[in-house]
Amino acid sequence: MSPAAEPFVGATSSTPVRHHILSVLVENKAGALSRIAGLFARRGFNIYSLAVAPAERHQRFSRVTIVVDAESAPLEQIVGQLEKLVNVVAISDLAPRNALERELLIATIQVDVNNRRALLNDIESLGASIVDVDAFGLTVMLAGTPGACDELERRLDNYDEVDIHRTGRVALPRLGPRLVD
Image 1 (tube, one colour):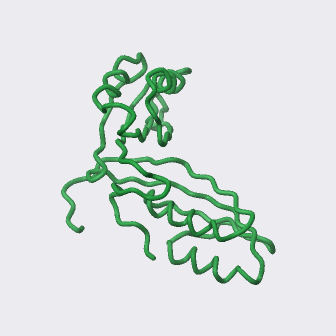
Image 2 (tube, rainbow, N blue to C red):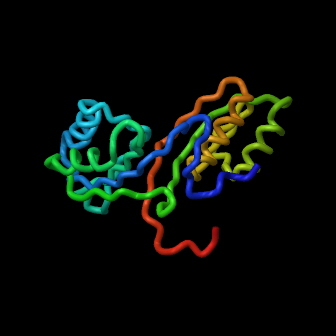
């Protein structure tokens, strides 16, 4: 099976509802992320995924990508509440069909001679890379669409002793109209 086509707007076993992607530019100051998380908690908004990183070389600002459960609150209410926070500079709502979404999945899998070939086939078919190896296991990485990461995680359920970590989504608006569907 090939990785899921983008943009990811459908439901999978780990993403049962539609989501909004908010890209929030904040001043990189102590407590900014805490205030955002507190706002979501106080209002009962469900955060599906959260990723934060410096937005520029000088680290004056950070980009917070928040994937919000569309059923937990109206988007306008979420944006309105975020705009009231002191350190928030700008908010963009990225419609999934107009955004490029990526997520990083890293997994360490214990393998033996009986299941190593099957694991290598799964890794190759999904476009994942081996980043570390020893006699007893592999560490693999996939930077891809949320659907591709979901599929790799589903396939890794077939193996014992798997340790999986996912970063959460990051997203940017597409450059222009899609030339290929």
